[in-house]
Image (cartoon, rainbow, N blue to C red; front, top):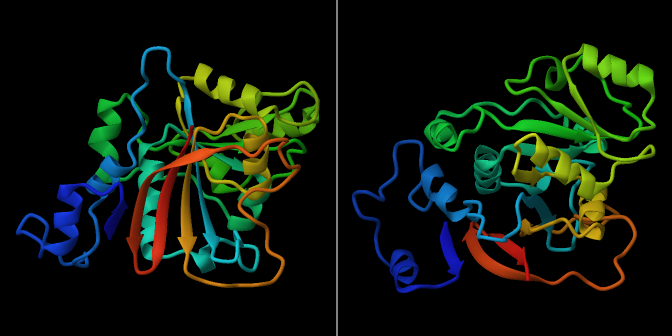
Amino acid sequence: MRRLFPVTEETAARTSEEPTSEDRPSEDRTPDEWSLDELAVAYAYPEPAPGGREPWLRANMVSTLDGAAQHGGRSQPISSDADMRIFGTLRGLADVVIVGAETVRQEGYRPARAREAFAQTRRAAGQTPAPAVAVVSASLDLDFSLPLFTSPLTPTILLTGAAAAPDRVATAEKAGVRVVVAGDGMGVDPARAVRALADLGLKRLLSEGGPRLLGQLIAADVLDELCLTVSPTLTAGDAQRIAGGPSVPVPKRFALTSLLEEAGYLFGRYRRT
């Protein structure tokens, strides 16, 4: 992996020189593969400045060159090993992973697992061994017998509206899910959901989609950062983009803060201006 932006003397030298003994890979690591520690530094959450935004909500998405966020209904076919390392790193840094109910169903979501590589960092930050998963759902049409709900290392959270069906809420709670009301009607208010998670002490927020949820976060103006993987693939077809739903009145402007590359995949970080 190499850093394309921002370019400094150090990063320029790193891409042009042979690895030092400290940089040489272990048996299960290729020469150009960054360690998880290096990725954790590259993707660290910003320290809250006095009067700055807290919590911090970032989204992580992957897109093909022609704008598809998935192929065959799933993101895995357009991903890569490097993309999955970054995916794991972002989870390792987060307090909570926010995901839409449809993505849970399509992607077969399981509980986030504890990873030894991030254990010390998470303990030092006062985090649980693994991030919680917060599922956004109005209908609560979910299979609460799945491991995501019955056996997570950190209890799964369900974000829903005040008008959610009481019997479905009861079923979720019986499975051990923490139900959090974040909307006055059937749906979830994104800004209220972010505040509710922060009130639970979860301030490093990571959204993994899907496109409909990301569109709602954008429209509500609560997204602070987008981590976008551009896959060097073309799929055509009618797959969704990374964000869906109604358009915003004025395009939201984000600034590029970091760009990495490996095997033709581009890994960008964009923050609100």
